[in-house]
Image 1 (cartoon, protein in one colour):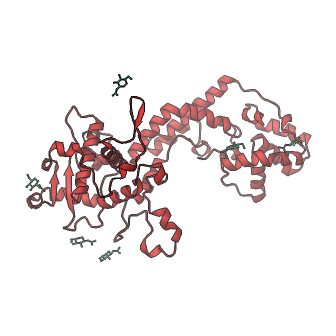
Image 2: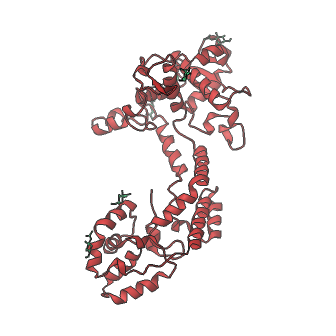
Length: 411
Ligand SMILES: *[C@@H]1O[C@H](CO)[C@@H](O)[C@H](O)[C@H]1NC(C)=O
Ligand SMILES: *[C@@H]1O[C@H](CO)[C@@H](O)[C@H](O)[C@H]1NC(C)=O
Ligand SMILES: *[C@@H]1O[C@H](CO)[C@@H](O)[C@H](O)[C@H]1NC(C)=O
Ligand SMILES: *[C@@H]1O[C@H](CO)[C@@H](O)[C@H](O)[C@H]1NC(C)=O
Ligand SMILES: *[C@@H]1O[C@H](CO)[C@@H](O)[C@H](O)[C@H]1NC(C)=O
Ligand SMILES: *[C@@H]1O[C@H](CO)[C@@H](O)[C@H](O)[C@H]1NC(C)=O
């Protein structure tokens, strides 16, 4: 079926009518030819029958293509070989790749009004634009993450677990839902105890009532000495998270110099929360910032700050032991002189830093997601455009057929 990979610039109708004339003039077969030309015979037949012009997934297309197409072709007494091989001009192909790439660049433009204008200038309508497989829907993603990161009022469970009342009704949801959604894969695919530890850190950092006088805090700025790279800053914060957990305090991070720029606007300015979801809830942050103004809070030990700890304490990383010594079960990953070392004295620190970083970076913000989209687009956009155009069924963007827009690739 390789001729289908090659796009023609000849008007669709001409080829179709030629072929249709040579064939039975039944309506079904005419549709079949149109669709065949688009590589979608069976799918469109189904759609035509159902009169239901909704989504057809690419995978569906793939399946029907290999199994059912032959039958339909035979039925319509039409052989794919008969399709004229209409050669592409290379420059035309390049032009389409650039056009698709530019159109996707428009999609990355904010605000939405600018986006439409940008697409309009290219002569492309958004509904006719194939999905970009390398771009994420950042708005939808961050809405979802927001929901997964917000406690349900009065609920003692994290938001991704089944609530008590529902346990009996949805027994299956329990095992599926109890794990933190930012951890992909099973326990075997992650560092030992990762899912339990991530869940416990989240619960620790999100007490259900931050105003409860029993909730204590550790409020700390990120390191900002000029010599500190981002890795050192994160390593320092991992140490502080370890201290906070050991002392039963909620860690609240404050000034973050790398977010002190206009890209991080509003309350996210100079905050870790510009790039990633905050380490704690809004309520706990507010509470900690209130407490810092109350003199008693420090002397009574409800609040501590970085000044309460020596830098040695912070950097030595007193790995929490509440989960035992899970690092003893780590697969060897340390390579010294070409051989893997199964055990060494910093295993615990490595394990803990991995946990802390995983937690602090559990959900990127919409801002980070957009930055990543832009970077991916710059790095892979052209490649993605080429691939999409290759697998795209039918003309793009010239022929404004509903079939073509329906079968834009979804991912
Ligand atoms: C498409 O079909 C081919 C051949 O049957 C198969 O190898 C491939 O995995 C399929 N792709 C998808 C996305 O289903
Ligand atoms: C498709 O049809 C042709 C001719 O009718 C036949 O020779 C060929 O084996 C068929 N292929 C498949 C995969 O069924
Ligand atoms: C939460 O609990 C408090 C105290 O038990 C109660 O007054 C309040 O109505 C509850 N809120 C919701 C939304 O259930
Ligand atoms: C949280 O704790 C404070 C102090 O004990 C209390 O006044 C407040 O009602 C609590 N809020 C909820 C929602 O239980
Ligand atoms: C933290 O430091 C403050 C001020 O130096 C001090 O009053 C307080 O007791 C310290 N807290 C702890 C838990 O050591
Ligand atoms: C690594 O191997 C080289 C050559 O085999 C040796 O000279 C060196 O001392 C080794 N280093 C360590 C840290 O074992």
